[in-house]
Amino acid sequence: MLLVDRKGDLCSYANPHAWEQPLADPARQARRSQLRDQIEVALYTPGSSEGRGRPLSISIVPAGLGRLQDSGERQQIAQFAAMSLGGMMGYKTQGLDLQRIAILKSAIEVLAELHPQTSPTMKQAVALFDEADLYLPAQTKPATKEPFENLLKRSRSAGVGLFLATQSPGDLDYMLRDQISTWYLGKIKEQTALNKLKPMLSEAKTNVAAKLPNQQTGEFYAINNSAVTSLMTDMSLIQAQQVPIEEILTLAEQTTG
Image (cartoon, rainbow, N blue to C red):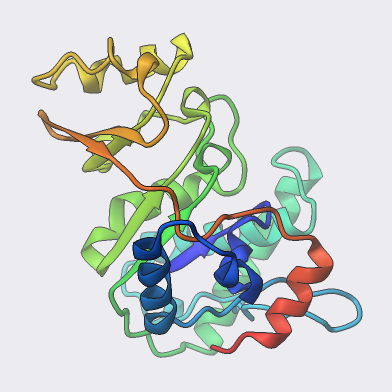
């Protein structure tokens, strides 16, 4: 399970103190202890100039790129890699920066041909992206958007499941909603978000749109095609609170994985 955390609150899972906070319900305390015994948390972060933290060490050239037979697919993946690398370096998607990104793309393709790595063996996995509206915004096109759209289309066939979470559903691009099989909708009051959800909700057997603004904390509707299920969720066993960057670096050094 991979959690992509932009703000630092999900890093609480790597904090031993978060697992030791007293819970009033003995049953929840037991469930939390059981969960802790069954998982191993490894925290990765870009690190700092002092060499602290622990980076993912992502290769510039995606593994297996040079062995792809489809030239169109190879060029597309090289473009995604170049856009991502350019975004890390502060390049914009206009003017001279577009030329620089094009040069990066060509360099990545050449490197892939010179050093064709073995394609990685994909294991089944699930990834959660918090604040998904920032990766797939409706109004702008950041470097993450096109690769993310491609990921939504192809992840299932590779054995990878995706969870996209957002508290700003009105800012999410719904053009790819057909690629998402199940939706979990909590309290939504914003009219912009409700309007964007209407095409999907119109197929549901229950009038969900009228009920969303009045839902209480922990209440959700699960929608899969036209089937609608009402859910009541429990509070998380770990209280996720934003972890300061200095503490994130320390936790990354201490965790294993």
